[in-house]
Image (tube, rainbow, N blue to C red; front, side):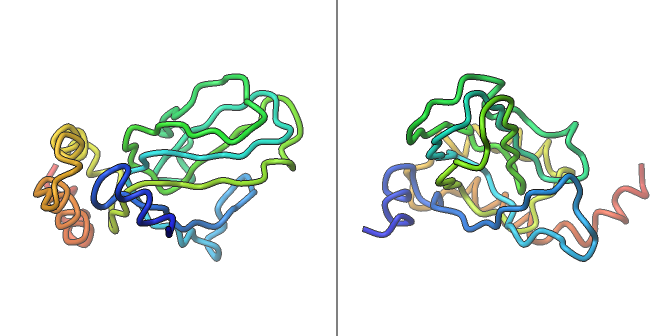
Length: 167
């Protein structure tokens, strides 16, 4: 069975394995903007071999680490395959901060969630409002709250500069 279908049947429609690129740097150069799609991150799966302690955070803007949400606070890192819930955290970046141990031996990372093209931090109040409705109806084949969020996220960003000018 393909991972995307497996994830979709386990966590509901729209949730699947997300594609991503690993980026190990302390800043995001303008020439290397992330190609990762914004999403509501449902789960993070990590196969760890040598990290002893870590913290996992997620956010929508790489250059604003203070806005990242703790998916997993500083804790002991099990040396095995582990699946952490991420509670549909809006994200484009996942940061795994290795506090103790050797970060070279993280063998596998898999992100599972719902892709939401155009999701921006400015839409956080809307996400906060719609998320309980989205998760309550995650098995529904026509989750209107999820579709509403996707529609707004895809159509609103070009108008955000004009909207911000009114305040």
